[in-house]
Length: 128
Image 1 (cartoon, rainbow, N blue to C red):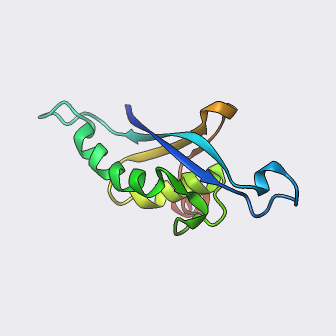
Image 2 (cartoon, one colour):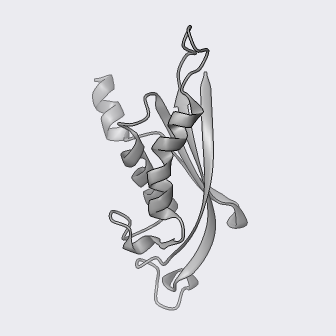
């Protein structure tokens, strides 16, 4: 079974890797949506996979670090692509959210997004 909680954040960024003159090389802003997905079975006593209040607490620190910020200035996000934001969130939450399965980060206005399911390197090691 999967449950999820979403949060929205507004942030600015620029992509240092974009070619000179490209719009992404200049500071611009987006409305982002992040979805935190958890795998698990309902606890027989509570009926819950993970309490949504506990998930909100785990997410709140990450939300505060991203919302209304210049993402390039957030530690670990010097190159703030959707992919890097997804990995950044995973790294912040993986030890706080048992059963973390996916992180979705989208820019709704652009109809673009990224789904991150953890390190492929780590999954290959676990399978070996």
